[in-house]
Length: 539
Image (tube, rainbow, N blue to C red; front, side):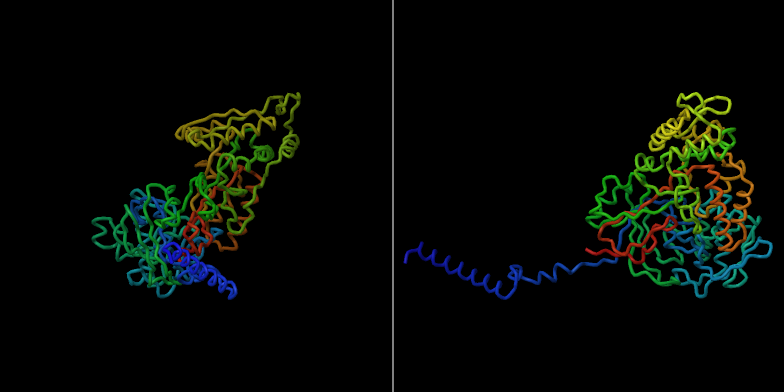
């Protein structure tokens, strides 16, 4: 047999063998993948789990609560420390280290009893003396550059431990004693009272001793901060490790998701979702303490009429503003209060866009187009004309101001736009040379709004309502949760009706995470990393 015939015969035998195998597989129900080495079905379902999750952050200057003013540090503190209380999703104080509490009859003192068996992450007991020491430290810091918690303690006269579990806090005034102020980190007097700390002020930069869910295993403020479960935590303990990795900017984070260098980032920029592919990331947005407003100079002879303020509010298409100029990063809100504050009905627009209703309100108030020139006139036949000021350095507001002016022109109100740089805008607000202003407010978590809604200080709306002023005072006094809820409901009702500020929307923040991140819960503005103990990667 020739060489060529031998090769042909071998090929024929080989193909016959392959056909026999295929036929056998077909008859026995197996697939072609069963010819491959290994168990493919098991391989497709076998996922890798990692309990180490990397979180992006920008560089912080310190992890010392007595000196740090960095926002990233503030949110890290919620994982490393505990306060006497924490704020829930409705901004209602809930006990954290505190077990029970009682105000004095005069409303000028508060006795707090701590939970039993509290410990810091170094194993030392956390006692009432640490609470009193912490308060003294924050008060002392008022005389320096202040802290993130200065507003929370400036009304505290003193704090004294009665025993290991009882501390008595005394106040200067009875109208600033809300439990919402007592969320600041309780620090260790062993660490912060040491001669080394007094000499260097370096506590928190090389080691953190707190009582939170995690403890800091390693700290390199320029590179990364590694958190591991705090085995002395008083509640259910975490099982994962969090690495807070320092990036030049948050926008870099999603690019690092595929290589798992980071898997999550807390992000506030309005354009944060631009360019993100929903197939590659998961975005969880939530309400913030920032509100975008159209403010009224309520001292103006025309704008002092709440009916006119309502009409103007109805004429402004806030949804179009949000989606066209603010990237859709907001939710409806009725007042300056956080949406759903204390369970109140404040999470909807009180004056949704309705041009016809706006025209009717103005007409009923006596402001009409008397000469049919398309302009609204007052009782003396003068055209309604208002100056609207804004900060031109904020591009979203610059565009929104023009749209608001256009909306009001359609209503028949003439608007003079006046742009300022940031410094000039603040001066213009202080001078009161405006009828309308476009701006935004970020309120402290405790939500004491007296400076914005009563008195002369920081009250650019020039608004005054005697009953509201009394409600705001009572809300910050020694009242129970149910009492404060009733007060808040009445305050929200007044604000909806009086409209000193038309709240265009509440800004939202987001947690942007890799699709591989599991265990996500709903973040809240007081703790964007809520539910961190349940995070893990699966890939």
